[in-house]
Image (cartoon, rainbow, N blue to C red; front, side, top):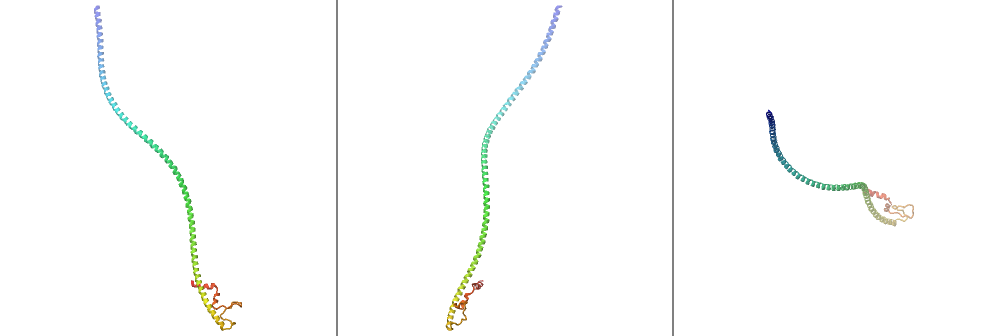
Length: 241
């Protein structure tokens, strides 16, 4: 009976151990299946990781090439920027020089404008003086023209008077010659008459020259010499007209 009890206890232990082993086997199988699943997942993850690594390496290489290209472009742009900066510095210097020269030109233009203003004022004053001188010259010219006209009129009058005087002188010379001839004839006639008549007989053709007893009678032709010169000039003027 003790043996049976021991056998029963042993069998129960064996059963319990068998159940534990089965449980452990099931757990082991489950773990193996889980490990297989995990291994397959690890393999898939490894493949995915490898694929992603390859893609990443390709992307990195592509990005590296792009970065190299961008670096080259950047270097080119930096070189162009440096050249542009140098060109801008040169242009700035030239602009400053142009600004300085422009300011100098502005100052010179201001000086020239002041000079032009002064010259304009001088020219205006000179023009006014010239206008005044022109007016004075015109007045003087008009006065000279009037004086010349008056002198011409006076010259014409003097020429006319000279012509009249010449004509009167010629007429006087002719009258003097005629009177001389008549005087000679009257003297001859008087001498002949005095030889014929008495000395104290009155002469019908003589002229008594006032109360002077010593005055001699003038010949008949010489009486015309006692005429008024104005009366002698009147026939000559009428003749000239």
